[in-house]
Length: 226
Image 1 (cartoon, rainbow, N blue to C red):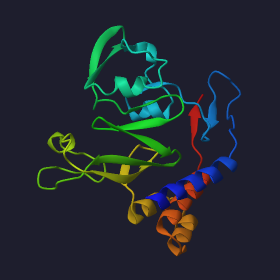
Image 2 (tube, rainbow, N blue to C red):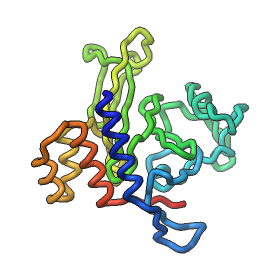
Image 3 (cartoon, helix red, strand yellow):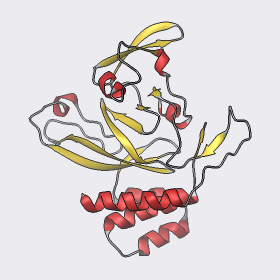
Image 4 (cartoon, one colour):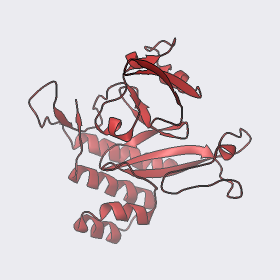
């Protein structure tokens, strides 16, 4: 685990040093900006994946709550409840904590998997995150590698040990996969040269994995609306 975190920190540092924010559009109110790790996301809740992709969350003003929205614990406290209340088209409605894609506190982005939120540690054409969840019991749980579906009776038992699983996400369509050699190669296959380099590269598994995620992200940058 320590080697994984070290690999991530080193490669993220290289990524920051190797990129500059670039406006694709001159209109300051509606401009696309090439993503870099210092990009400022709009605060709010993403009802859908497209809300994240378009940097268009439900704003804090549309959330009905007595919590202090300026508190650093605002989202943690808000989303600890099983449901939240929001205003949509002038109507008050409630959402279960499994019914929205995620949220941003302005600096970081968190995706939702059945009420558990994981920070996107790498954001790019290939995103990366680690999800901490109860140890799976395959005798009483349905589990999908593609979408991290876990039945509720297996999720919330406080007596279960936890496990940390690594995932990658295709920014183009929001599909999520367990991080393994096959799934990463599938995403890298868009670039035959890079895929061949990945297959030939010899080195520690974690370093190799994150090195090629970063190489791919640098070669195929993504953009967000300001």
